[in-house]
Length: 212
Image 1 (spheres, rainbow, N blue to C red):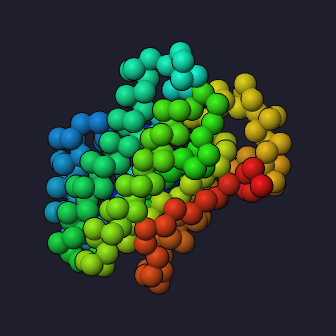
Image 2: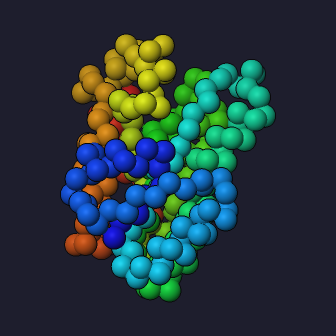
Image 3: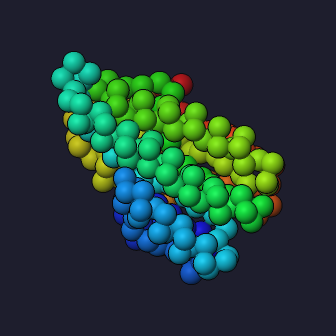
């Protein structure tokens, strides 16, 4: 079974069709430790949990000089601390099983930043450091931990950004178009494939040649 933590999990049925009825969709507030623990406990009782994908994320863009503390803290709470809570809870399950996959969704912003995205970029840079550290912790038990770093993707979350700066963003993409959620899902499916067993602690960009 593959579980996912994301804002709109129902889209995975179309974006990630390969998992079919092996996908468990549950809404969870990743800023609430009790909710995360309850989800992990329920998944653990099933006994067949194979992988967890962390795709929860928000943006609250604002130049640093005008950014409020709440905008900074909220983005880090969801994008980074939420990932820590999920990684810790499900990491314990996989640690006991001596098997499992944890896949986190980062962003190219974690590597290069972006105008008005100090909070988002910091959260994703922190996430990538967390992924590498968690991978080192769990590797002796055979648990694989990796991350994807998508470039600009056509999605609900990026709609406002693209309205303001769409042409500039597309010009910076070598393939001259936005990525699609299904394309990211296809790479996620590959990273979760049972025969890919010697890859951990990696952050893999899927960005259409962004900023080449």
